[in-house]
Length: 130
Image (cartoon, rainbow, N blue to C red; front, side):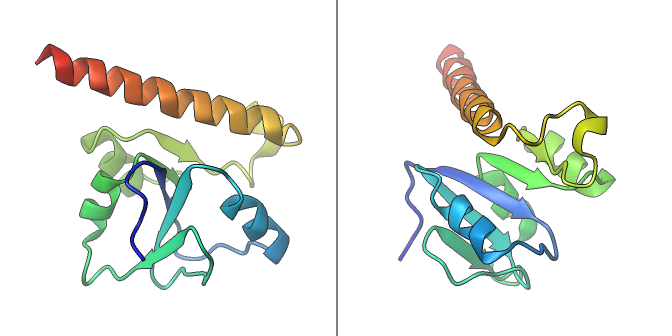
């Protein structure tokens, strides 16, 4: 089964990620999202697609996704900038010190969805102006 082209495609750009079963259940329950990983990171769940970097080059995967969730690092942030992709930086190690109230997940999820919608509208308008 392929990915839904109408969904928000989210690249989880990590080599490892220690999510619990409960966390994975919450992630795949997000309506209208398809999550991509690059192997070896992979979970056998609906709504999560693990890609082989030898078949799908990382730069192509990133360029195809709507948003990238990653840890701060020069290489991936540079790729996001080059591909004009918003980067959702993983804050699990930084918590409130980074200015994010990590316990308000619903509010954060709504802000994330609002940003994705605003970004899509911006890109559509930019294309229409060309």
